[in-house]
Image (cartoon, rainbow, N blue to C red; front, side, top):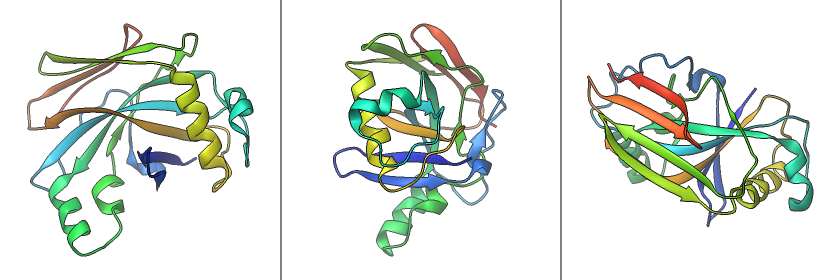
Length: 186
């Protein structure tokens, strides 16, 4: 199982994360000792249902039927150092427990989906229009480079940041009014 994270939709950049990057079961997120500045970013998550290679956009919808929210923890100070030295970004984005994922996903029934995220009760909401076409484009694009297998996860950025996280923060995420994430930062 692998996680394919679209970093930049316009430039079509993506990163492959190991399964050790997953933070599951609403377990607490522990700030890693190698970073002093961790930012929480909100993502759309899709789980792949079938083996997919070089699929066209019009058939990509057959490869998934559920989606959810995810929170990516980015070590921004480490990322700045990676960029400065033209090094890969993996250590800033793919470290252990850097991606909080929900236990339950929501059925993809509508084209317009509301996502809500909160840090310490401060809510941010975004409505993604035509969400299926965005997912289909991402899956089609990725499948031309990497064979997608059953259980693989694909994340897309939602352009919402919860900002820098600190010990004691409580983070929540909803997809279509269904709570998917609720965990503490320690």
